[in-house]
Amino acid sequence: MDSISPILWKTLGVLQILGGILIWFKNTRRYIAAFFVLFMLFFTSLHLIENTFDVGGAVFIAILLAILVWNPKFIRGKENI
Image (cartoon, rainbow, N blue to C red; front, top):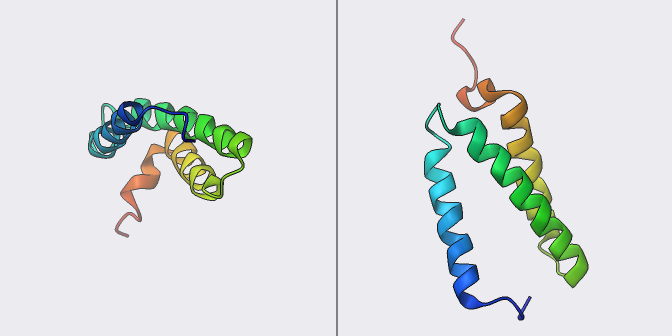
């Protein structure tokens, strides 16, 4: 993981912050979640290749966002009965 430029790490951090904000807007939610599923799958493979221990977090976020792409109502929680 040391071979990746610090500028690239900062750019990825900004993408994550922007994604965390934009995912709350209804019209961009599905696109942002789909992008980050692919994003996290890439980093899951990178963690596996580099033999790091952060792979669990990447897998968890990819699964959570895949659920959001599959069922956008998931983010709203329970409906009032």
